[in-house]
Length: 197
Image (cartoon, rainbow, N blue to C red; front, side, top):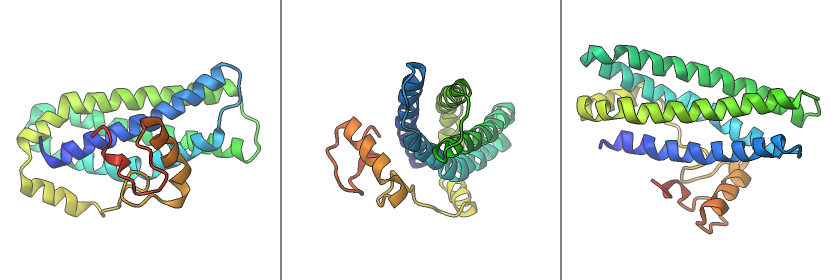
């Protein structure tokens, strides 16, 4: 397995942890309770600022490299790239709605619940499809030089929550995840990104 796809699988595992938090808050919605809107907003802010802008862009470039060499994979690569756009739009809408709620707006609970559930469900299906259908092709087809060219086309940005340094905005969220996975960290930069990798 190439280092890039191994890292992407680890990032997917981190994204799943965040989707689990959203799903837990949706369950609070469904039970008639008041979910932690700030937590949900922090999760979705991260999802729209890191995966949507950097993780998915790198994947799209890798998918292009594969279908150039294996034309039979073009439809799959195009479908996954289109899903990245759909995920980004749905995430931005959810951020907008959650931000409005945090700022005091009244939105229909059922709409927010449905949108959040649809987002997490689709994101999970998308990642599973990538890992099963195209990551093995990336490992087979792309050479180290191809990966260097992909990396050169995307400005490197460290993961603001699961990287070595956790940005202030994500500290509470990071600690919440750390307590759930049992790493015992109380400080940022604990290496939680490696749990489950």
